[in-house]
Amino acid sequence: MTSNSFFQIALYVVTLLALAKPLGWYMAKVYEGEPVGWSRLLLPVETLIYRLSGVDPKDEMRWTDYAIAMLVFNLLGFLAVFALQGWQASLPFNPQNLSNVSADSAFNTAVSFATNTNWQGYGGETTMSYLTQMLGLTVQNFVSAAAGMATLVALIRGFTRRKADVIGNFWVDLTRSTLYILMPLSLILALVLVGQGVVQTFKPYKTVSLVESVSYEQPKLGADGVALQDAAGKPVLETVEVKAQTVAVGPAASQVAIKQLGTNGGGFFNVNSAHPLENPSPLSNFLELLSILLIPAALCYTFGMMVGDTRQGWAVLAAMTLVLVALIFVTVPAEQDGNPALAALNVDQSASAGQSGGNMEGKETRFGITNSALWAVATTAASNGSVNAMHDSFTPIGGLVPMWLMQLGEVIFGGVGSGLYGMIMFAIVAVFVSGLMIGRTPEYLGKKIEAYEMKMAAIAILIPPLMVLGGTALAVMVDVGKASIFNPGAHGFSEVLYAFSSAGNNNGSAFGGLSANTPFYNALLGVAMLFSRYWLAVPVLAIAGSLAAKKTVPIGPGTLPTHTPLFVVLLIGTVLMVGALTFVPVLALGPVVEHLQMVGVGSAK
Image (spheres, rainbow, N blue to C red):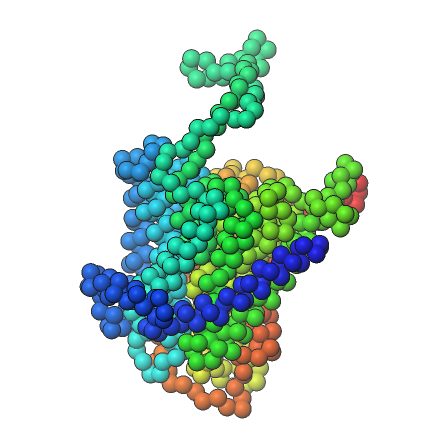
């Protein structure tokens, strides 16, 4: 690795950790009903929202009511996005006159954005009207993220309350997450991105003249639209000269801001954050990359503040950061070393050999290898899924790391709210296992962890692997699934595994070599996204209700401290052990085999 790589990684990690405390403190104040500073100006707006919606902010809910409210709200969001896609040809703000979206694609997209996954089987600029992008997708970016944050806050209240049967009000938590946190941060980031060159307009797409015309040959079509053939049966070719290009534009900056801050990740354009009008400069790249992990990192400090012991939050953040940094230092060297098989062509692409090339396939030259690899790790550590490079073109090890980060359950930072409550599920398992080792009833944050909590935590941890492994197995066994695999062998298998790892953990990124916009994949991936979002959120709320009803257990000599380096190691070990035992065998069939094949070819040459 180069000194520049070390500098960029250090700058990113240090900036992220430096911002975690002030933002985390601010969010804790918001959720405790004590907005500070300028945010007090929004109090009348919050009150007005409650009056217009008929919500009493003092009326708290049992966990079952909280879960029902969350599910109904998300169902309504799903239906709204589905309807917008089905009717967009007849609705305004469609300057390109884009047609209605097919039912299977609309279902997949509506599920994807309602579940904070933002998996996209379509090209944004060729499929979605401005109204669908704004009213449908961007709104869901806000509220799906806010729903995850609300669920986390409800779980935290489960730890802090004693013999209570309520865990807060979903509508209040949803409103505060959106009004005080997501909207102000998104507004600031969107304005900065516009200043950097991210497009924000309602004007139609622009047709511009090329500096130099481009010529190419294509089959000539007859009057019936069928390709013509000569006497030998070969296609008749015609030369086409292109002198102009259509440049897609639209209200992108407003969606880009919340897609990053809310760990949504859906791209306004098909190539996502590699597009020059969505991510034009090194500064915009750094700010968008920082935004991906900003709120998940800060929520760790919020967690510590709300449970009355900030050391608890720092311990969880330390576990997340250690895994993140370790995997960054696996991915970046893998991409900088490149493909040894190219040595046979007398092409040395190794940065260690004095060149800065490395594996530049599928990467933007304005970002380079370090920023591309750093983004790949961050976006899959969080359930963000936005990309500034083609993950399908990474080396086998470089592609394995993002895939495995998703398979860990999206708990290494993870989605806003969902990542931390997923990590807390692993913490519950960790203290339970440690309790068994010393023969004592396990405790976490003053609450006994008993059979009910373990059952719910087991459901939350095991549902995503079931979706990933089951979906992958089905896809590679049936003809309709295999028909979409365009790459043979281990890499083709990796593309299917990556797709279900992404959908089954609500990430949304893709290898890209799999043609997934088919009725089979749209339906199967949609089901995986639904199960992985709500079969986690509901058990988490069940644990919140169970813990809130318990009394607090005083700390004793046998209590396991959960803020020490020892617990950080135990927590990391629990996460990695579950990921290793679950996914190492299937990874051996994909990226591991592909890496051995690559190394073998390089050695033979």
